[in-house]
Length: 399
Ligand SMILES: Cc1ncc(COP(=O)(O)O)c(C=O)c1O
Image 1 (cartoon, rainbow, N blue to C red):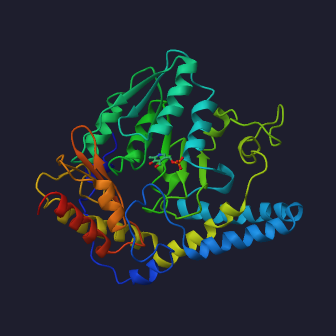
Image 2: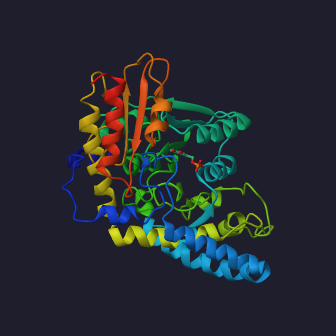
Image 3: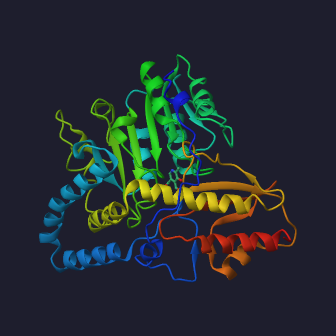
């Protein structure tokens, strides 16, 4: 195994306060002042300027769809350059898709190399819809899915690496996993796992729903075969913008999920097979440029550092609630802007009503054994938003 993991330095989440005026950044979003929006992990709010750009482009498009659909096709190429530059992809190696669910279906259903008796390795922290895409594709072909248990919280990247790689067998043909998981926000050591998988001839498909716009990202350098990402979470793009990237070698392994004008018999290309699934609204993709601009004015490192700063602030206060336990590791190599916790079950407290009343948006509520909490903050949040959540918890737990 690479010793990259062993050498990684421990950096704690609470990076030093940056000098950026976060209140001014918050004003560039249209979340009402009274709302504490702590669920960026589900849907990122779109900056006002990007909303206005989309609306303007839409208005223009509908003034002459025949003409502007052509014009916008040309502009999509410019946005592909911008997005590719931001997350490390060559424009010819990725296509816009509606979301990660669609993009992962393209990979799971399209892979020509899977056949009966093969194995797919994945983790127990994958997103349900993506899990379904792989289960469906596997059932059709008689492929077995092996789901490994990840420690939550993990102490080191090595533990996560071992959990996945120890499950590889001679029958393993694909490993699919999140870059940053939805349930606990843990960052998996994808680069090291992909390196080992490639060494053994196993294909890798990464669910990057959460990495673009949360942490600095260079997809090409991860060494994976497929990377499917969302722009409508941490890049704060309009809903319905994601991408599917495939390495130059892996592109040839995929059949198209939807066959349209771009497919040419005996002369198939990756872009031809995947880029144009019929008439769609390109204004959503074009708004991504504005979202990237906003992140670039702050700086990718500063965006990530702010996520860690707010995560550390919340963590200290939430863990002071009796019985609260972290599900997310506290170091910067293992987590950033998503933090998950369990709390004891508490009778006679309606968490949903309390969230609504206080205008807090977060994942918080009981399951069979615990109360589960997931806090995901971004550049529009302040410590005051987190204080309001902590006050709610103190009320629920009588502190
Ligand atoms: C890890 C992960 N993968 C995939 C998805 C699905 O994203 P979408 O609904 O945009 O397809 C999510 C959504 O929260 C997610 O957290």
